[in-house]
Amino acid sequence: MILGTMSLWDKQLNFEHTVIATALEELQLLLNGNPEGRVEINGDQMYVNFMEFDAKSMDEQQAEKHESYIDIHYLIDGEETIGWSSDREDFQAAKAYDSEQDYALYNPSPDEILLQLKPGMFAVFFPNDIHRPSMGRPSSRIKKAVVKVHVGLLHP
Image (cartoon, rainbow, N blue to C red; front, side, top):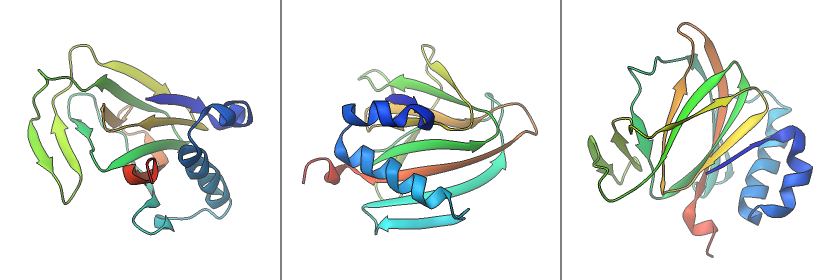
């Protein structure tokens, strides 16, 4: 998991994998046009989902994990809480992995760490990261982008 902010991206850029750097640079370019929905960067290998929704309470949100894609969550507006925990052998899925949709669902881990995102912040979740996004104050709006990066791009 990586947590960062776009305001310091030029300092962090040199320490990130080139694919993650490309994804965030492409996202910055797209943000200038106020896009909506799914926007492809490189077909199914790299694309962005732009979304706006009401925050969910911690009681109603399950955690998720992906195997084929890395998620880069970027907060555009609002405040978002994302839970994070590392995958481990004793952590059982509440909903088994669906390879077509690329996700498994989990109940929150007792050792989950809560990340507080403010606009301009991003969090990168790899396949070993179980994350619980979309949480916040009841009735508050969250506007965000999620860049989906196929894991095959890391090892061409």
